[in-house]
Length: 135
Image (spheres, rainbow, N blue to C red):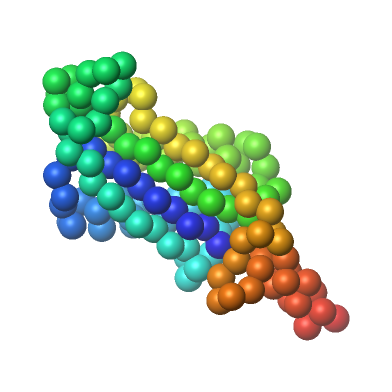
């Protein structure tokens, strides 16, 4: 049940946002094995003149960047899966955004199952309830 927030440099662009969300959602499903129907992605655009790396704006550097945060349930993916996701995401977004600054981040935040949920229920409850209903 990933909750994803993408900050991308540049002016607001709904078509670009849609393309980025589609790419991110596919990678989340393929690499991290997360269900599309409970994946949420939000996108924020930050003007290049307000995005700084080493005290220089991306406008000055004439580059683009992104910062993606994804929240997933703790211990549901191997280290190799997470590394592969970060690598493929970076390559995919670099291809879409073009002229990507190397200081573009992906952060995977693992949330404890008893402190994370949707539909008003924790993931821990959903796991336990799923096991009971299958018994």
